[in-house]
Image (cartoon, rainbow, N blue to C red; front, side):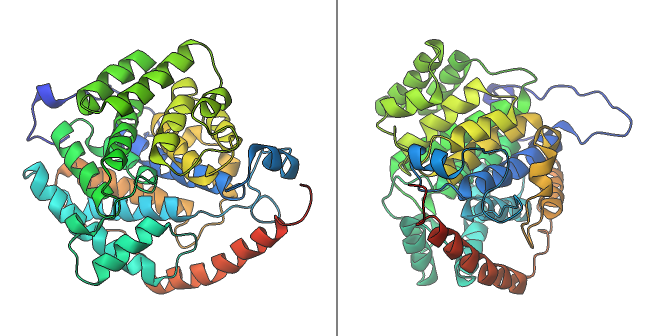
Length: 384
């Protein structure tokens, strides 16, 4: 925990966890690893269904008990997981005990360089706003000026980890979330949505029981109370849950009955709705999210991060982690990454990011892109 801040800036202290045999990871490490792996598994579950309407998805995949991208029920991750891992590497490299804005500037610089080189690896499916922002980085814009005016959901897919790591230090969490958002998206709506995700991740990671919708709404009001539109959306989430509505009905009330869009004021409220109703049931939360259709990989990645922060690696279906054929960012590599993030965060000092050979990333994308294209062509065939 960062020692610079005192109790008034903390929403909730970390729970005590007794030692068992064999030793369990410390609470924060468990939550960080669960958040990263939860992002990856949710992303992979949603990737095969991305862009499909609810009706078409049900026709193509009547059963959704495993990954559908590759034969044999194997799955791969998209940019949602890649950005989360890059953000984790930057948190490792720039952790410190100085003022929030100073750490946020270091973080933004590190993350900006990772985004630059990520683009050189020719990633598939990059969003237009993110592409334009990274090109601005390459021509010399600093990270505080590289973002474009967009309210897309790109930043929401990567910021849950900030809440898990630094949600007990609200000024630092806010500064880091702002930096992680504005490097690509500078619409204030994007920052409101990402703050909401980070706050949810913090509460998910530090509670041993479910977070009540009203409790979350109160905490969110202290962070985003000056934005009437977003707070009205958040209240609509709590009201819908109180009425016993499904995520499908809530999404339809936002105009997303055919699929959740990439607009952050659609993605985040829907993700919060699923999370608040299924906080300890990773499988049910992710499957329900994917079944909503639309931008299913990103919305499921956000939900997976939130529930994963609560349940840890042990709460994610073991077969989903086993069948995640991701490389070189394997599930084991992601788990080691989470442990290193936790160590750096707890020490309050920067460390050495986990090594990843850039040549293997290029090779991975050279394999990934044809696989995604082949899957896209398969989706042109019946059933319609």
